[in-house]
Image 1 (cartoon, rainbow, N blue to C red):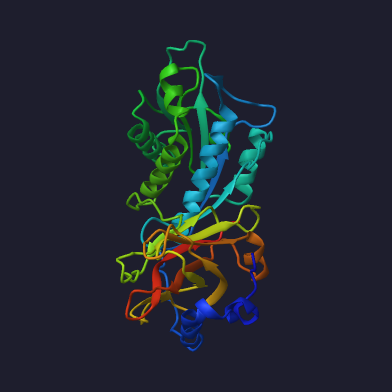
Image 2: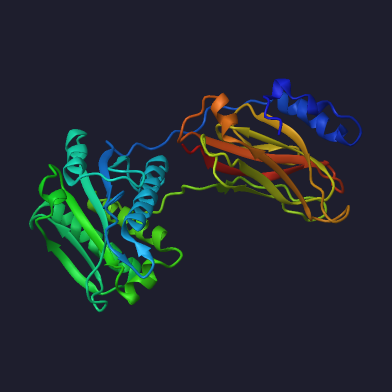
Length: 373
């Protein structure tokens, strides 16, 4: 695809069917807006060291086709994503700085894990594990701290409660243990054993679709509660906002973002708009702030000087229906060339030729997404 900036987009000079679209871009070129709204400060960020247990030559528990080190890493990675999303979402939750003791399948010693946390220093250490036993009858959820009556015990209790609520497995209790990662951590620390991989009951839950997300959310809620925040699921994926303009045919164009706007992933994010009048030319625009400005009988959803992407075509089954779809693939290299950083937010919208209406300009709703690493 052509990912040039608008000043270099020669595709806008097409003739014929693009006439109406080109006329409307003149208005867009002169449109500006005020600054974006700020975010609400929620206090100093809490530093959390997330510890996926085992790794590398140490697989941990194995049972019913599951390997603990892999499950631990999957849950920990998703947990970190949610904590980062919570920081970026001002509507609820808290602010966090997050590190992991390992991000890949490598071996890290117990001392190495606590050394990382202590040297940072972290405000909390959370170790993620899954259990095993010689008998397949052993089952249930348990969570550990080093001692009772401590902030670590409070964190442990919240983790145990949230995991029980998420999975509904047998309650094995909130306990104390002389585990090295709990004993040697200089900050409140807790270690979870969500269930037994060797149990057919527990492993069916742990291996089910949705477990990683449910487990990561349980850990997120526990940290939020421990810090005095109400449990809150942050918006970490694309979110629609603004209001689409209904066409003369009754089409309600709707934006969607497929994939991730990652700086490093080889897979581009696909920004699409469905329910477009068939066989029309469209133009995707984006900016770094949202907007809600009356524009050509609809709403301009971009709150900063918009950047224009190349012209696309809606195709569809036949002229005069709502089966058209506009798509633009944007690779990570594009965001890199513009010096975007992880956590930066982008707001995008389509506008297009929309016959069968008084003002033949169609406008979709907007979609917000966040640049990933």
